[in-house]
Length: 529
Ligand code: NAP
Image 1 (spheres, helix red, strand yellow):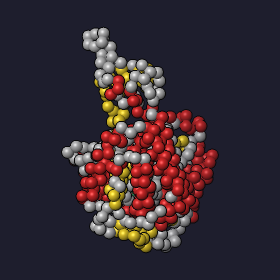
Image 2 (cartoon, helix red, strand yellow; image 1 turned 120 degrees about the horizontal axis):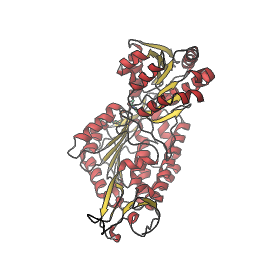
Image 3 (cartoon, protein in one colour; image 1 turned 60 degrees about the vertical axis):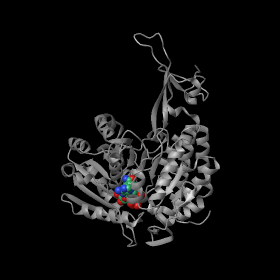
Image 4 (cartoon, protein in one colour; image 1 turned 180 degrees about the vertical axis):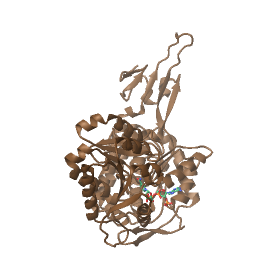
């Protein structure tokens, strides 16, 4: 592995920019890390976007098999480079080695999941309506449809997932799988890790004979350089993970373009957990232990961190809250990803502590080291929560808010007041779950994934997972940013009417050369015509 140069990848060429040098910072020690990184120039951003536009037709015509080979090659190269990736990422993020190893495993798994999907090919949803010249009053034309790549996609890396939601993460894997060129905006929190990962992808693109514009990595401030990428006329879609402010800014920029484009932004989520009395009476201590683990996992820096705990006052719930408070008090602090995230967390905790009607129940231990997030447990009444919208704001870190309800109607009112979330969780006995079917329906209305008797952290990457939900958890609640369904974000439907067979994409040809399951005149079939 060559040493870091601190320069963007504009297709296969390294940036020559010396502009705005900056360094990654080790958050555990608050010290800057060599080398300097340089912001791409406006000319280089243009070049990366133009290369992506030039690569678009060739990538769109690339077979599922060839895309699968590319994705698997990237995964193999990541596997070989794991020691270098872990060494840099642990320094840049303060994340422990085991977490980085695990996340790299997930990243390779995602690439291979999409490789299998596109190699099989059925995902394109091929549909064929054969002609009927005798139909009255008008003849029916032959017309066939399938999903095609949308075109160049910009991916904004996530601070809290240096691998799985960054350079070779789920957005990049799903966009490449769809056949879209990708321009990645590196996150300053792990820019060296980004450079290593980008070099692996560029090597794989070259080795597989794919066009230069298939992949670029841009360094520099998102608010400046990232906005140039987002506004470039060649761009067709954006994938983003981060703050609501950042995601919203990109949504607004994309909507204001002469040609608006979709933004798939994963932003803020507070992941409510409703705890019913029977479950608390039967296993309150175990729920408290599990909940503490979920709240403080990764110093609370997960988008599925449970930030709201809803319960009805009873002897069992009072005992549960006492237990949870004592566990929070014992919790050790942990290094947060960046000084900015740590400051935002501290500000959030200070603001909430001073909020009328909110009580700070418990705080974890502080080591006094730099950038350490200290766990914080708050409580309020349902009436206060429903009346004060800011209590739904995400405090990104190991903090949760208990919402005390007097009765089930207040639980309903609390859930009814919630914005969109990635997840919602319900704990209850079997009898309670049956009796609370309407509550489950309410939870389903505000979240993309509903969890029963579990905890929301730990997102499975699969064909069935949904990591999305109504705004503001996602900009577009019809989609998911994790799992194989994420590919559909970077596609558009195209219909081919009265095409000669040889001019059709292989997926739609009469002989069904790819042996796909297709919708043939309304019936699913793998047959040739
Ligand atoms: P962020 O500030 O939203 O930044 C994410 C990326 O978007 C960075 O590359 C950033 O670039 C870029 N960006 C920000 N504002 C932009 C704008 N107006 N136009 C174009 N690009 C923009 O998120 P973060 O740095 O990861 O963390 C900050 C806060 O975000 C956290 O404290 C937390 O509240 C929230 N967050 C939430 C989640 C979640 O999963 N819910 C995950 C991560 C972060 P520059 O910073 O270089 O400008």
